[in-house]
Length: 95
Image 1 (spheres, one colour):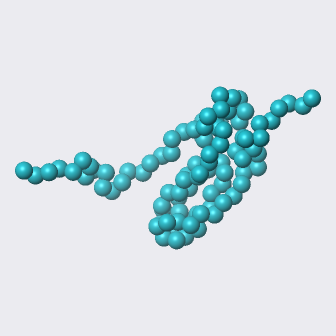
Image 2 (tube, rainbow, N blue to C red; image 1 turned 135 degrees about the horizontal axis):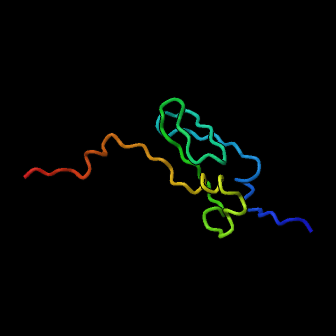
Image 3 (cartoon, rainbow, N blue to C red; image 1 turned 30 degrees about the vertical axis):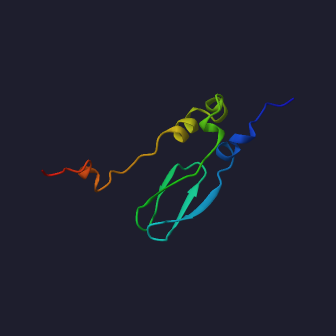
């Protein structure tokens, strides 16, 4: 009997799949692979996030199944660019 291969992890462990998303900011095309967590739009820089919903998020064997490097990359919180209005929060109220 061969080694068990979890079918739920195939989307991240197997051959990456490719998807094209439409940028909500400029309407340009954003190409994103199943192993990418975020990709900036080449036209305007808007960051699109991958909709990866896999067993990597909840399975206790995920790290063993996909390996340390891929597990770390897929579970790392996405980098967030500072908003130009971030310094204005919380708003200052004059009395």
